[in-house]
Length: 469
Image (cartoon, rainbow, N blue to C red; front, side, top):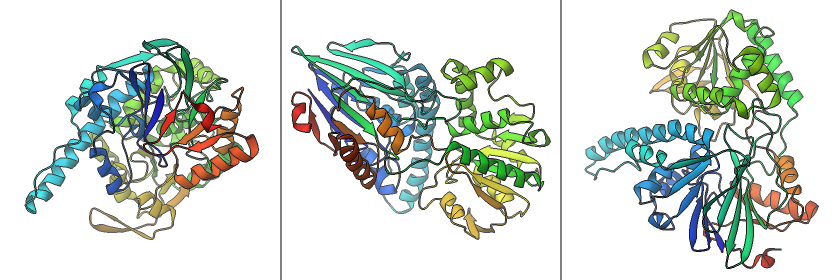
């Protein structure tokens, strides 16, 4: 029995871990590698295993860095089942088709450039038909439903509190009378985040794979975040200009809409027109609304009282390009939520073009902005930005809100691992190398935990766990 790290080892994206036991081969996640061009080029590298010989996939949640290579897996010969939560399957129906569409379109543009240079054309990493094929192979589970998916392989999903449907995966393995329990954290949510319940606690494991995204830092208290938001709202009330909110389609957008609905009167939102201008975010929002059984108590009570979690009389879903273009004719009084979250593409760039130069307008940045992105430049105080070859002066007021991360922080990770009744070997995944080292050292020093950093291609021997103590 062994675990092989095939992705998200000393990096944040491309989650992928292979388990071999009892003659079965199971994959935990199959995520897309994201980031710089040279990083994303690795998505075209052959898998370090034969997809045709995989018996099953277990998917922790729908984010593309965990699910985005599933269509490629099918294209490469995988014919087994993908086990995940029902809400994750619903989100994947949107996200994987959109990912395939982007691969097709980006390849078309790249091939035009290659043609001019006399180079051979490329094929898309995968196509819409591949996404549609893998969706037919999904098999859904509820939280706490224990199921034997293969001989000697039993799994159970628990709420990870990250996005709707996100799961912690428990895996029981049996080979020749030897039993091992593997626990994979998936992505653990930020405790206290709106809508979803806090992550579940697991008390038994022989070995743990744990994410470490924010393993070197602590989130600010929620009271500070809410005070910051109230200050921004007060500032906006004094000027009539439009408000732009770039937001990730899954998770962040829904939290913002719920926050607006809860504070509708307090923040005077009835004086504004609110637009959700993102087809993908609209579909994700509708999925969140369908899965109301997964809400925490506060959101569940709000839903039962109001009949909707995010319903507002002045909220408009803008699906078509024509509807989006009409928004740009509005010069004041609009709140526009649109992707992409880091302003690297999507409809938000068009809204920036029409508003960033207006001193009466506001831009609210609600999430982390990676180095090199347009969002990062604005956070760092850029006075001018370039859009489609034209330069625009930044006159709108820029606001940043900290503390809305969808990942738990160092304390949350330590608390989650600390609930195990023993100190099982833990292998850190899904994090930057320096972050992992900080968390590994802290776990060893303060918890006497046998903590390790998972290495790409490293095999974890489940028959000899003593050597990892």
